[in-house]
Amino acid sequence: METTVERAVTRVISSMHENLGQELTIDDMAETAMYSKFHFTRIFKGMTGTTPGRFLSALRLQEAKRLLVTTELNITDISNLVGYQSVGTFSSRFKSSVGMAPTTYRQLGGFAEVIHTDHRRPTNRSRPLAIQGTVFPPLEGGAGFVFIGLFPDCIPQGQPVRCTVLDRPGDYILEDVPEGTWHVLTQSVPYGMEEHDGIGKDAAPSIGSYGPVTVSADTLLKPAHIQLRSMRALDPPVLLALLDMRMTALAAVAV
Image 1 (cartoon, one colour):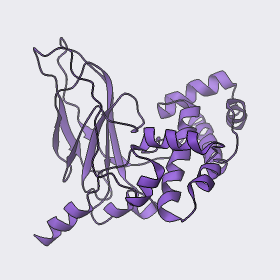
Image 2 (tube, helix red, strand yellow; image 1 turned 60 degrees about the vertical axis):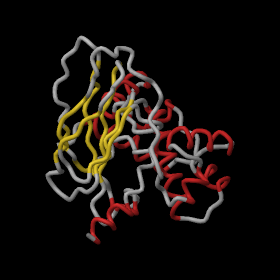
Image 3 (spheres, helix red, strand yellow; image 1 turned 90 degrees about the vertical axis):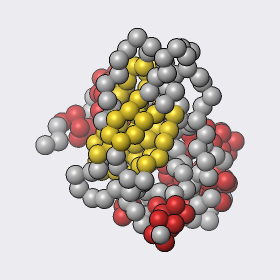
C-alpha cells in the first residue's frame, strides 16, 4: 500500500512531467508535496536515491531522448521544450549524460555503437578486484539482453566505470574494478523490443540495482545479486544510450 510520503513524492514527480519546459523550484516542489523544503528534499532523496533537482534534470533529458527519435523537431525546439534556454548548455548536458551529442543520438536511432568506460584504473594492482553475482529475470514480463554497468550514483548516465552485456539474465562479473563506492545498475528490454530502447509503454524496460557497495583491497565483497523488476514512477530514468543490440538479436534469430 502506498504511504503518505510515497504519494507526496509521486505527486511531485507527476508535476515534473507536466512542467518539463517550465521553471520548477525546490519551493514549488515542496509546496506540491505539502512539506517544508528541507524535509521534502530529505524524503525525496530517501525515496528516489537522488535529489529533486537531479531527478528533474534526468526527466528532461529522458524526454529529449524520446523527442529526438520520435519527432522531426530541431535541436533548438527540443531544448526549449525540455526547459533549456541555451542550446549549448542542453547539448553539453545531453552528451555528458547520454554519451553522445543529440544529433548523433538521432542519427543512430537512439543507440550507441560502443559504450566507453571511464579511464580510471585500480590503484591497488596486487589484488584484482571484481564485482560479480547473478541477474535474475523479472517475476512478471520478459527480459532480453541485459546491460550491467557500474556507476558512481543511482542514475545510469555518463560513462560507466565498468560494464558488460549478457544475452539473457544470468551470472555476470565486472572485473578490474577501482576502489570506491559504486552502484551496480541493470536494464533489460524484452527480445523484439530492442529497437525501441524502452521508449513507449509496450517496451518499458526491466531494471535492477545493487548498492551502494564500497570496493577496497581489504574488503571481501559479497555476491551482488540483482532482481530485475518493472520501472516505477520513483525510479530515476535511464539516460545512458545503450548498445545497439538489434543486429545481435537478428543474428541470433537467423541461426
